Structures are given as C-alpha cells and as structure tokens.
Image 1 (cartoon, rainbow, N blue to C red):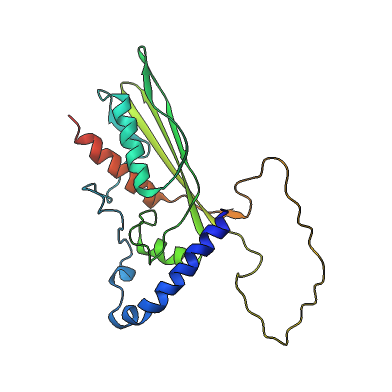
Image 2: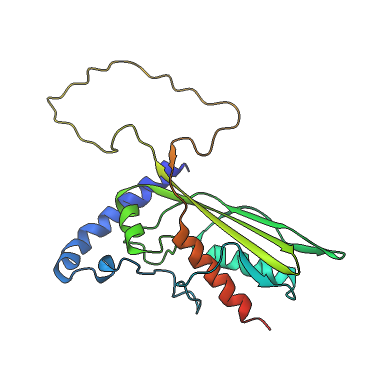
Length: 221
C-alpha cells in the first residue's frame, strides 16, 4: 500500500470519527489543544519526555552492548511501527561494533489518534490533522573513549500535491485540459522521497526518544 493510500484510508476513518466528536469538542474545548508543549508520549512506562538531553547522548561504557541496543530499539518502537533495517551494536573481541537503525517513513499521528506517540506536541498533532506529514528516524550507536554515544535524527517531510485531494467542482464546470497523461509502470529503483518536501528536523521528538533512552539506561545497574 502506498503512502497516499495509507493516509487516505486513515483520513476517511478520521473524518467519520470527527463528525461524532465535533460537537463535544467545540462544547467543552480541547484542553490539550491549548497546551503548546503538551506531551503525548509519557504514558508508555515512566520515562520523562521533557528536559534537554544531549544529542548525541553519552552513556556509561560498562553496559553490555546488546542491552544498550535492545533499549534503543524498544524506545524507537514506542514511536515508530516499522523498522526498515538495523545493524545491532555488538562486541567483537575487544571492540564494540557500531550500530545503525532506520525506520520506514511513517505518517504523522493526528489529534484523533492519542494512542500514537510520534507527534509529541499539540501543535504537531494539529498540523498532522490538516496536512500529510511523515517522519523517518535514524539512530547511530557507537563506542568511543570508554562510553556509548547515541545519536538520534528525525527527518520530517510534507506531502507535495499538485492540487487538494477530493476537490469537488460544480456540475457546470468543464475541464479545459484535455491532455491525456501517460501512465507507465516505472522501471528501476524509485526515489522514496519523491513527492515529499523536506522539512526541518523534529527536535522535540528527538529529545523525547533520547530522554527515554537515558532514563532506561540510567536505571540499569
């Protein structure tokens, strides 16, 4: 299923829910909408999402690399459903091999999906409700100078459409453009970023992930 099809399926479902909840939301007011830094990522089990964790994050080096990597993967899965590839951080002899992880692009969670965590603030959720955005996470774990160094990068992209989808025209409106577009199956490797406009990095989500990792690893003795 393409990203557009995935989003449209979800959008249709959300519009149905929106019709049932609009009156109650307008009547009572949505408290979370008014919170500029409201967090939707705290219920997963104790880790803080606020704070200013360094990126890259430095973790003590006496931990087992497998334990560090499993913690990283567990935290990433709190926010992203699918991992595209991962090369675990592991020990080989006296050396610790670098670990790499990247997720599949994921459509941003909306105001009507409070169980999803990738849109951390209320502003992000409002924006994802009216626009199609997606995120890609990349995590790098390496061992240097007796400690683990964990770098998290979250790229955000906005869907690039030529015109609004589901735009309805009056019955008396005629299409003047009679050009027939050629639709051929593309051959070869396609650019996964085609049709998407790069946005700035999601630093708030990066902080949320890093704080979770730091909290969990600091509890380890």
